[in-house]
Amino acid sequence: MNVLVVGGGGREHAIAAAIAQSRKDPVIFAVMAKKNPGISRLCQDFLLEKETDVKKIVDYATANNIDLAFIGPEAPLAAGLADALEDIGIGVVGPRKAVAQIEFDKAWARNFMRKHGIEGCPVFEVFTEKGPMFDFIAKLGNVAIKPAGLTGGKGVKVMGDQLPSVKDAQEYAAQLLGSGSVVVEENLVGEEFTLQAFVDGEHLAFSPTVQDHKRAFENDLGPNTGGMGAYTDAGEILPFLRAEDVDQAKRIMQHTVKGLYTETGVKYKGVLYGQFMVTKNGPRVIEFNARFGDPEAMNVLPLLETDIVDVMSAVVGGTLDKLAVKFSKKATVCKYAVPAGYPDNPSKDKEVSVGDIGDALVFYASVYEENNKIYTTGSRAIAVVGIADSIAKAEKKAQEALDNIIGDLHSRRDIGTTSLIQKRIDHMNKIRGRS
Image (cartoon, rainbow, N blue to C red; front, side):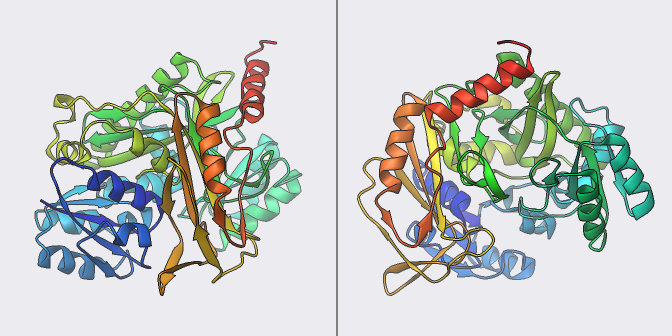
């Protein structure tokens, strides 16, 4: 069986690594904008090309008799790559454009949630004009401002240290209007978590909950990034969550998949990522993504016990309900090494050396290889993942591995630490009215 992986980041390295461990002995091909050394070593062949060049990717897939494709990033989905591959008979883990807009058009996504009565939708409005938008911001008082289109996880700003006042929020929203419509919604208060699922158009197979860390610096300070790291607990539920929080999030995602088919007539097949804020009133939807998260994919895919090629085939064939999709009951901690100065003024083209990482996993992201040496590009460089029976043990493995990656790099040492997780627990106890 020939399998194509589209994308060249850490998430796609994790996908390719999972496929490489399949008992089906698949032959792996890849398309990526830059050569990812981790992915290239797992492939029989790869194409260096823009991941949104649909025609060239379709031609490459045809020439290599691809049976299944796994689309990692969001941009190819927005470009209609899943449609084009499906239309020539290739099974695709990645939704068609009509339903992928749940991610790449935030205005459409919120209006869809309102229309179909999806639980967990915050108070919001979509604006194309400054006057009504300013009035709505002033009325809500505490808001989150979101550009409607794709921003790589860095375009959203919320009231607080990012937007200290209503006036700051209005000014930022006005800047975004120049690029299209703007979503203004209530600023949710609570703790974020991510729930991801394989989807076959009707059935969902859920992975363990994950908490990502977007802020660049320790103690959740600094600008937003694509994600500095994430952790899972030994089971599906994070320490600050309740079982009913996760059950409600699952129902929301199931309702969303059903609603997408009702709305578009297209079955959602691929991975659905729900980013939630658990509040005093239960989970609220921050956003949906139409693919695995990065870094969250690196937390959950190494835990997948079911053969991923079987999972991919079930997604394509609509038979996920016939497959027991299982994940190891282990804790994981993922930490990213990023270029110094990231994200605002990152150093580039600096050599990175990976030393002894013990039994941690390493996933290459935005790096390139020349003369058998690895160099940074200016975005997130390399991720390490520790896996153990507890978060504390997994964090120790990840940090020891990270300490043996040498270069002009920065990382957050606090991700997965007992003190930071206790802060999350205390915060939720306070929000729920428990001391």
